[in-house]
Structures are given as C-alpha cells and as structure tokens.
Length: 325
Image (tube, rainbow, N blue to C red; front, side):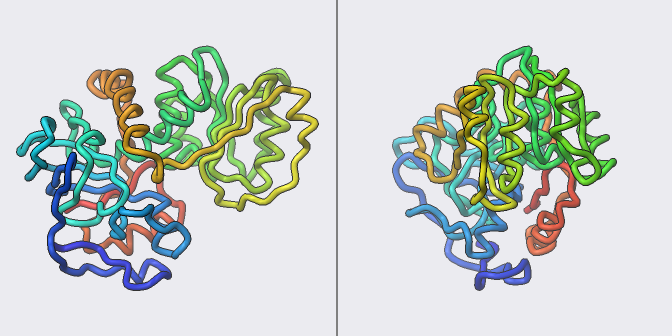
C-alpha cells in the first residue's frame, strides 16, 4: 500500500509518499480501505518529533479516517466488510489501508461523504469528552472557546449551541470571527485587536463565563482564571503557547474554580468507545437533521500531505483540512 512516511523529524518537507506491506488485523480489529483522512495538530507535533505514538500504535500519522471495511477479525460482529465507516485511530490514517478497533468505528451519517465523515472522529470525540463530560457544560451556561475557527473550535461552537449554551469565541481575524458567528457563536473576539477578558466581562455584566475550552495555554491560563465565573471550569487540551506559567490561585480558591485537562490519543479503547456511544446517541441525530456538520476548509490529495501540514501550521484555515485518497 501507499502511505505517508515521516522520513525524519522536521518540517513538512520530511513527509514522503512511500510503499510498504499492508497492515493485518488482530483480535477485535477491522481493516479499512481509506477514502479520506483528517489532518490534526497532533500530526504536526508528531512529525516534528514532539508527540510520539503510544505503545503499539502505528508510526504513520493520522488519527481519523473514513472508508470501506474490507476485512474483519473473526471475533468482530460489526462492522462487516462493505460497511462505510469513520473511525478514530491511534495512528496509521495517512495510508491506503488502516487498521482500526471495531469499537471505535462509527457508521457514516446518512447523506455524508467520506470527506465529511473523516472530519468527525478526532474533533467530535475530543469536544464531547472535554466540553460535555469533563467540562459538564449545561444548557443556559456560557462557554468561551479559544481558537474558534479551528477544527476543534468549529465543532465546539456547533455542539455547545445545539445543547443550549451561550457561546463566546476567540479567533485571529475578522474573517474568522465572521465564520464563527455564522456557525452560531454569540460573540466572536479578535484576540489580536481586543482583550477577550474585557469583552467577555462586558458581555456578561462582569459575571464571567462558566466553562473555558483552552488550546492555547501560556499566559491564557492566568487570564482564563480571571475570567471564569464562580464555580467555573477551565479545560486545557493543548498548549500552543507553552505550559509553564505563573497564576493567581487565590482567585481559584475564591471562585471555587476547577482547572483540568486531558489528552485523548493514549486513553484506553474502552474509554474512547464510551465517547463513541455518546456521540451516536446525542450527536448523530444532529448530523442527520442538518443542525450540526463538520466544517471543511480544504481537501488535498494524499500526495500533497506536506502542503496540508503547511496550511495547518499557518493557521490560515477555518475548520478541517482533509486528505483524499
């Protein structure tokens, strides 16, 4: 099969199309002929040498795929060969064939293309786990989503709005802010020109926000603490500005704040499968009704994986970047 190899750690130019033997299934697994694969920030970190795959995972980049099941292990009852699925994987997505755990396969929503379906697993699993499970977002609450125009951000906006929250976002340009408003955000703040703390305080009569989804970290952590409402929650899922900071924990104590965070890739299959069950129950109906859908910025052929990574690193995109096979 053809696949994208990381020839060495470095910039996008280290990604190369090569050929190797096709993977084989083990107990509980299925083999998928990949039609599309999502690009995610962890892929970029892995390519640069900062995010190694967990033990036992493929070292081929790619954490989400969509395609056709072509082979199953003897102990798998669903999916079956010929089924069209999307899947969350721990690696191996940038390839013509990819092994997935059957428990992490989901049926492609009715009416969705493979490209749309490939944009679902990583971002929707991440948002559901961190906004609704860990962050405990409830109808009527206010959420601030940093990086509102990213794949995670565009997903979080739609889901938070669908479940009755007031949604504030930060984004880096007027175009990105307009896109976030178009997806349902109630307030979009251009962080390059405005102070998000001041703007959110103004919008809430100085009350603050109940939940903050942060993929920036750095000095945002102390600013988030200053913005969080009493009993507020701050969930950190990435650290684009680094993780070592000084913060005023007196404010944490005074307002009874919860600061937490998570990563998804290294969690157990059982943990991820429970998220998948929640998505099928609560989110799949929103896909079918058209209330929620993945936002696709651009589609690249597999051979242009390096260009797709350059776009991801430029942060010029709004929504998801997809590889098509």
